[in-house]
Length: 286
Image 1 (cartoon, rainbow, N blue to C red):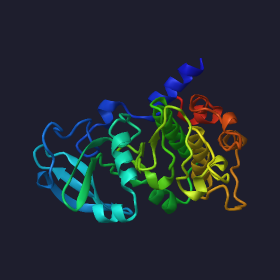
Image 2: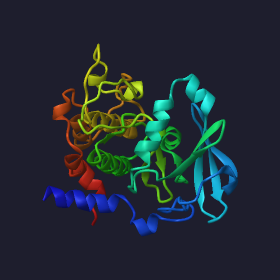
Image 3: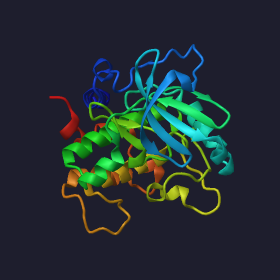
């Protein structure tokens, strides 16, 4: 019964693959990756964003005419910051993920000064900008977004991958308004389900990652960050800023509290999160 409900929610929160594939929002394989990629194959358009080590540009693949995004990273800045492992991890992890709720990774190449990552273009931009502009979302919209993110995280965990840096800045909005996880520099493939590295963004760090010494943690860190994210959807603020604003509906509070549980073992798993009454109320197909 629970599995059936989860499947219904999954089918309702993401458009069909046929409907979501387009030249404007990244088809499954827009570039012939059997050919050697180089910068001359692309027409460079407007900048889409700026990161710590470079910029992201809208680009057109000349041979096919497909629109993609090109992440350009500066090698000197990467080496100066000791971030080689993050870039390598982003390529290794992201290139093995295939899901409608995750930005597609098409390939990478480099020259003497830069590393180029070719990824899907999400025309809606960063979720962070939308949230800051609107302040907060309605319960219906918050539930829909939370369900989409939960489904994507459920897929990651099925591949033994922890995201570890979930936040509005790392979620993009696709052509049809769907949530797409991005930025896998802090993600890790961890079949043992145990890690000891401190990473992520302070407001979103779960308590087990803040213990002194070398604390162990597992994939439940992503459940915690989903709880923080959902609270922020509903209120416009992180839940630890001592804000008087609270969600009004008990059912929404229960969903958030079930994720923001101090004991990682007691956090609601994503299967149950997707069949939670609050999610079903707004996301189950009619």
